[in-house]
Image 1 (cartoon, rainbow, N blue to C red):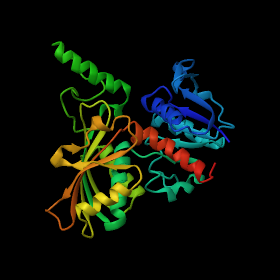
Image 2: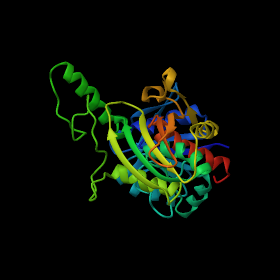
Image 3: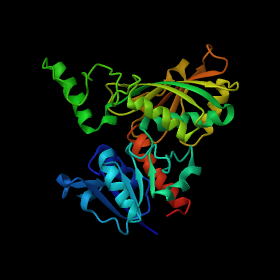
Image 4: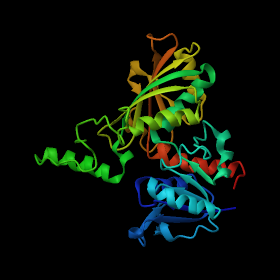
Amino acid sequence: MGYRVAVAGATGAVGQEILNILEELRFPADEIIPLASERSVGKEVAYGDDKRLKVRDLATFDFEGVDLGLFSPGAAVSAVQAPRAAAAGCVVIDNTSHFRMHPEIPLIVPEVNPEALAEFRNKNIIANPNCSTIQMVMALKPLHDIARIRRVVVATYQSVSGAGQEAMDELFDQTKSIYMNDKQEPKIFTKQIAFNCIPRIDSFLEDGSTKEEWKMTVETRKILDPSIEVSATCVRVPVFVGHALAVNVEFEEPLEPDEARHALHEFPGILVIDRPEEDEYATQIDCVGDHATFVSRIRKDPTVPHGLNLWVVADNLRKGAALNTVQIAQALVEEGYI
């Protein structure tokens, strides 16, 4: 049996990656329907190597008879269009931040909390977590299962693709302009991103943290365990694709680095590359285009009774967004929910 699948936000970076992954994973779709704003209607998007699909208008599209809606059109648009699709019987998997902390909507990483998947029936909507949260909980889950995590301190090194195609263009244009001695003022970011790091992602909150840092805290608790304390500092770096995290974890029980390596190695979706003495550790360039979450530099933190440090890297457009979305869709099919 094949499914009718709508991809909302099909012209954006994540939407295009969703289309790529649907084809790569041979998702059982009889029909793929790309949707975007009115200005993109009639444009063509690629599906596989030889197929071109015409974009339709998300705002007027009739979702009756559509089995799955994979949404990444922006939070404001999803807030309106996702419930409309869900009311028509379409199961929505939403990539935006709008529904993540809704108490009746599950926030899913299939390898981490598949037991929460059935809660989609509450609203016919499933939320996809923040990109950095996904790769962090992927690394934390197998460790939490054997030693229980008390506290996490994380610093992120997030690529510009997390802010969209225009942000990627800004990094490219600024870098080129500096070499041409024709410096350009930032438009997408608050500071120059070329040859620079910006310790701000999303807006600032009253306590001095950013919304991105808040997301990592509350989403980790919702997905993994509400008792875990999380302190995050999120930084935008001049990298096109791939997020990296320096993660410090404090456990309730002792956990040796070799035990952690074994648990991570056995966990689905994790690839351990950890031979620093031979310069074998993952970087953002290594993860681009890969489905795995890479974990490296697993070592003790001697400043707390039971602590480890980890370096976690993943392609934010794939596992951080599009791949996780399609994996949720696969889980719905495999579990017989649709």
